[in-house]
Image 1 (cartoon, rainbow, N blue to C red):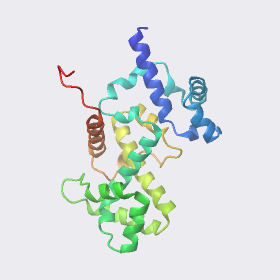
Image 2 (image 1 turned 90 degrees about the vertical axis):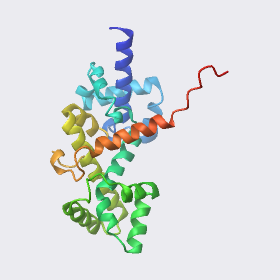
Image 3 (image 1 turned 90 degrees about the horizontal axis):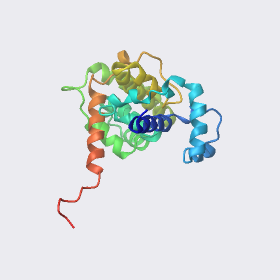
Image 4 (image 1 turned 120 degrees about the vertical axis):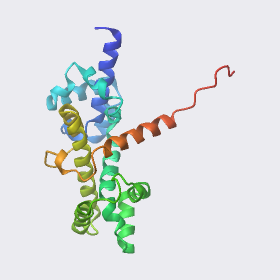
Length: 228
């Protein structure tokens, strides 16, 4: 095996491990888990535990993920960023219903649970060509009515909707991608996901492309040629 191939396998194996939800490491206490993530010995221990849960994803041919790295940038994301992106997808899918909400206390409640940034994103996002379908607004309104003023219920519904959209996208791309993404969550909605999405095809890919553009924009500028 060439040194380049070995480094490729190591990088992807590290990314898989970082993306796993803590629930897939068994009964390891949270503080010990976090400590283990930051030491070579601890990471080897975590990898052994994770392999028992999903040995196929930790198979030696880690370079099979490489063709997806350009478009599926989440493959390199740590677990917290995966969750944040999932919640944002859920908010965008529920956006048409939330835009119909005018009662002040309900608006304040939704903003508090979502956070101001995601709230604004959900208000402004227009992934559909034209207005969102009536069915999407009605299904979203049904979710909001069911959750009422229960913050935990709304947060759970938001995450579930985002999971369906994200997993549906991965499922349409490749079953291995969907299997890998599924391990980023402690629990999953009922499959299949592709037929249960509210967002139009291509919406998740567009969001990933926007995330990639923001990542590039955040990189430090290279010094001008000839600069001292």
